[in-house]
Length: 164
Image (cartoon, rainbow, N blue to C red; front, side, top):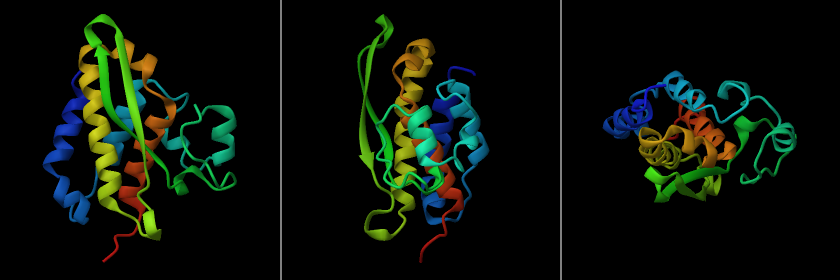
């Protein structure tokens, strides 16, 4: 994957932010999934996880950051997201650290396209900034649950009904 693929994706999403959140433009989920797969963090292609049970993911691959509360439900129903929100350290010296927050796009029982979009966009900006400088070090510190969260956010932005 080109070093600017993720940054370019984030920039393109930012331009279309209002339309995607409003449901007037469809998110190019395949482009997002290709970028996530290109990171090489998850063991399998991101699309193979959506129908997997939360329990199977938790016991097989998760780094235990996500709140998996309904273990028999598929991952696509998960309401927790991990937002990659900050990078610090010295990227050029291979000493980086990412910080994460939990976000819930289903707060109060209603789906928030804006929350999922911001998880996706902001995380891609942070990840893209590190990837463009040192992709090898990024793969050492970026967690599987954070990458899965981006896939889940993209999936929900396309597949969740738009609420009036």
